[in-house]
Amino acid sequence: MINVTRSSMPGFEEFCEEIKELWESHWLTNMGTKHKQLQAELEQYLDTPHVALYTNGHLALENVIAAFDFQKGSEVITTPFTFASTTHAIVRNGLVPVFCDVNENDYTIDVTKIEALITDKTVAIVPVHVYGNICDVETIKNIADKYSLKVIYDAAHAFGTTYKGVNVANFGDASMFSFHATKVYNTIEGGAVTFSDDSFVQLLNDLKNFGIRSPEEVAFVGGNAKMNEFQAAMGICNLRHLSTEIAKRKKVVEHYCSRLSGINGIKLCAIQDGVVSNYAYFPVVFDGYKYSRDEIFSKLGENGIIARKYFYPLVNEYDCYKDLSTAGTEKTPVAKHIADRVLTLPLYADLTEKDIDMICDIIIA
Ligand SMILES: *Cc1c(COP(=O)(O)O)cnc(C)c1O
Image 1 (cartoon, rainbow, N blue to C red):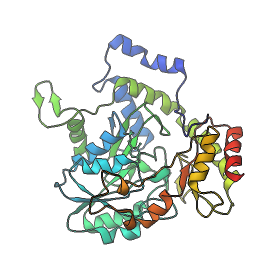
Image 2: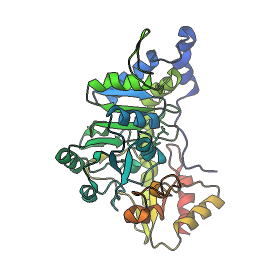
Image 3: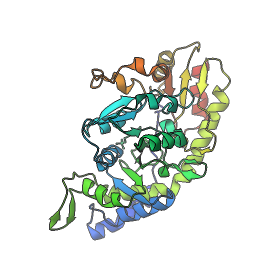
């Protein structure tokens, strides 16, 4: 069986060595030494002023949206071509998601359609760097500045990616990264917020640690979303191997491309200009190909190969959102078109050429 992904892991001994001192300190969570070390290493790696570490990416996104303290019922412009988390984080903060379509080149938010969706209730834009493709950050910044909106990036797919030499962690007012087991870089589960506003250090700390500021001072109604020491230890180990892992993923993607490009009805994503990619996903759009997406999905499945209809269905057709006045896939026709035709193929560092060839042979046959 070939799964759609396979978590990157350090050597067993390396991880044991990293967690050894936890048996000496008996300090397992609450911002211990591993947490502090990983935070410092990530601030350096991402070349960003501040990193706040979380137990998962979703709570990181929920917390950073909460940190802006938007008025309940305000509108947030986002896209439906994403994982459930993005919209859920908006809605669970009492805000209304307004779905913007994506563009047909890289499936990120279509910046030409944002302004028409802005009303006097709009407070923020939450764009998604889908598959590690970078949103049009310059145009988004111009629109946000013009209308005084905040920009919070869902950068769950984009860890390690740079645009024009700048790490993607530095765009917008804040960015969220996911370190879930299925992502390019993992801390088993985990996540982070990156930001430049110094006042957010205290605020995000309050939000993720019950508002506890000292043993006898609780100053804020916060929840609990701290990254623990085992997660941080995994992160410290995996960070050492990240560039090797990304280099291997690049080879996998290049081999896929050599087999699947130039075929009528098969559309691949090109690496964007100015972007150094993390090769997070390999999306293939079957548009006018001799087999439909669903046929390819079944053919692969019959051969023990698990591809993923990512993202299908669209968020704006979920049962929990379809009755919203802002929902409905007719408002986002490009996203609908892609969601009905896209498949992400298996991609992980150690996927062999032989396996890639087998997958491509099935698709082409
Ligand atoms: C994985 C993911 C998240 C949520 O991350 P978790 O760490 O699983 O909570 C959010 N948004 C997108 C686009 C994701 O792919």
